[in-house]
Length: 468
Image 1 (cartoon, rainbow, N blue to C red):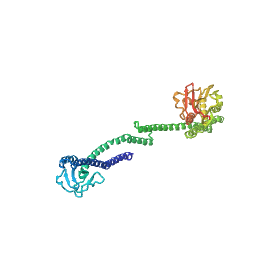
Image 2 (cartoon, rainbow, N blue to C red):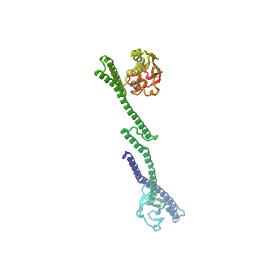
Image 3 (tube, rainbow, N blue to C red):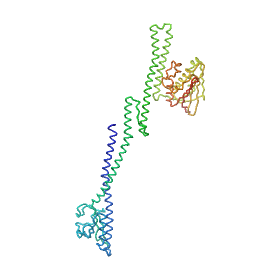
Image 4 (spheres, rainbow, N blue to C red):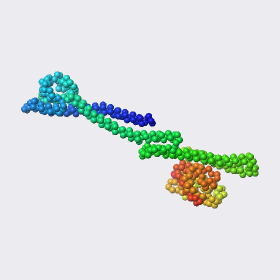
């Protein structure tokens, strides 16, 4: 950045200025010169034609002599800043507007067609002048005969002088425009270069691990949007880093607790602290702790598979049948707590398009949670309903409920509310996280409504299967 973009822009700007000056000095100069030559030749020819018309009156029998038209010729010559000659057919100067001594002089090599197809000629006119002049001629005619010619000679320095004055003005205007174009450089510096430096510095800070670094750009343009996006990205990365630390700490805690219990029970058995008649009791606890470790491992593996793309295997199936089968698997647990599962379906068969195995896991986790947090002799309501192209599935218990401050956290991995810690001794804190991952990967939503000491209801949607 230090020696690339900004300096390249300045270099390009200077090259633009240099090429612009060269274009003005060459192309504009040439075009201006050609235009002035064209305009001057047309003007000279018009004046020569007017003078020739005046002199032609002599040859039409009118009472007019050449001397009487001389003042008019002098006035025209002064106006044009040119030298005007009247010559006869043989090339002898009859009248000269500026040098009477040349009257009667014979022009060597006189040729009235010297211009060819051009309206004017350039040169010293057969050596009559010491500098280049533009020469135009107009014939003096009378009685259908050419008696002479009016020649007007304009020094080229007059034209080049006019051209130079035009170009000087053009150079000054170009210089002013080039100076004003510095505003573009200033705008580029303020709106692109400086923000890019800040963004580059932020990228370096992020690379060094300082995710709390903020880019101080508040403009409402693309740079401001990019800065806001990077600031948001750094916040999310910082949250992710914090989440990873918490995640590792939770895993360590949830693995360490059962491992500590297992180790303690086994050491107590080996050193004789636990008598043989108590072995069965404590070995059962060891098995229970290993089951807890196994569930935790399986939960982590499930979440890892959910994080990968393309894992869903969607088919059309009857969600009511899956609910009935899943509820039947909890028959023994429900009998123990005398809990009734009340199933209500809006239609006998409700077809959905989803991954059967994953949805069955969602239902299992939600029903399992409802049973865990329901009291003895209670009812759990499971319902399905249809609205437009969506199927709504509800699992509602009449248990302890979830505190308001915990509602947003229940989807976090390893999170357990204070109430659950007292009732869910074998829980891993991954069940609801798995549920949400599965529903979101289906492109659907899941909501929770809960009131403490009243109960909790989970409602999720599934796409209705199209019937062909």
